[in-house]
Length: 138
Image (cartoon, rainbow, N blue to C red):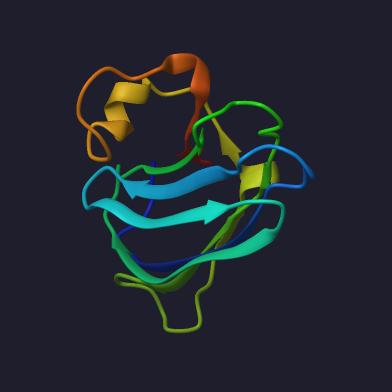
């Protein structure tokens, strides 16, 4: 969950490294604003970014990866970074970074929590990887 009120940017690279398979889809979803961006990646790397996002304390950002038609060879790599652009009430030079590999923690969210904004109907829990983030503060 966001520990701040302010403006952030998100940067990362979503990779589907396998030579086989039909690729993957990735989404960045805000608990407050819904689907922010969506990408399809097949046998390549794709830059994933949200240039500017106003966040509020308690807001969650979900990084969701799903297979296409087949779940064969759907391994992926995605380690996004969230960086503050401006924190409400802070000096303009104040910057914070959250690296998903080190600074995000938590358990899987219920797929229905964040995917309800993507599709209607039953969700196949075995075909979807959901990472619900709790931004760590010191």
